[in-house]
Length: 310
Image 1 (cartoon, rainbow, N blue to C red):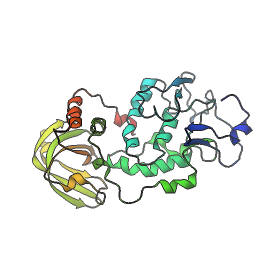
Image 2 (cartoon, one colour):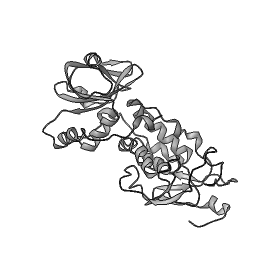
Image 3 (cartoon, rainbow, N blue to C red):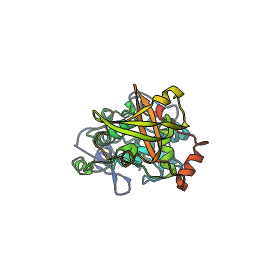
C-alpha cells in the first residue's frame, strides 16, 4: 500500500487473511504510526538492518497458508533471518493444530510473518487475550506457560491492529462441552507423533497399571516393564519409579487411559517436581504411520521448544 495520510489510515480496513483477518480500526483517536526506523518502535529496540518484503517459504509451516504470500523481515519479534523465523515458528505449529482458538494462526503469523505494509501493524490486544485465554490451558498441559514475549499488554487496544472477528464475537468461538485432554487428543499421524515427541523430554513403551484422580490431575501409575524410546535426562532409577500426571486432566476425556490392556508410547517432561504426560499413542506396529514415526525419530531434528516458550 502506498503512502497515505494518517487520517486515511485510521479509517481504512486492510485485508490480511482472505475474508477472515482484518486490520481493525477501533475508536477514532489521534494515532501516530510507529516507524520501522524509529527508536520508539518495539519498546525502544532497533533492528540491525532495514525491513524487506520477502516470500513466505513453503517450509514456514506455521504461516505458509495464512492467506498472503509475502512477509516483512525482520519480523515483529525481532527475528532478522528467515532461518531464525522458521526455527522459532516451528515450535508453535502443534498449538495451531490443537485448534484452541480460531484466531491462533492469525495472531501468531501477524508477529512471525507480518503482512507487507508500509507501516508495521500489530495484533489487537483483545485478539491476543482471546488466544491466550483459550490456549494457555493447552500449553500448561504440556508444561509451558504463556511466554513473556507475547504479553498482551504490549499490543494496541484502540488503534489500527490485526483482528480475526469483532471483539464481541469472541464468546461464540469458545468451545462447548468437555474437550479431550490435550495429550490424548492426537491422531496416528507421523507428523503429529513427532511434534508430540519433540514437546517431550522422554518417551517409552509401557502398559498402564492404574489411573487415579489426584486433586485436578490424573495420576498414571505404570507397569514395571518399560522400553525406553527417548531417554532425555531420565536415569534408570528415575524410570523405574516414574509416575506421570495428566495435568488438569481430572475431568477431560482420555480414551487411552480408559483401556489398560494396550501398550502405549508414553511421552512426558519434568515440570517442577512432577513428570507430566505430554502425549500418549497406542503402540501399534500394524500402523504404517506409527512405524514411519518410530523410524524417522532416529534422525528427526526437533525445534527448540525451551527457547520459544520462555
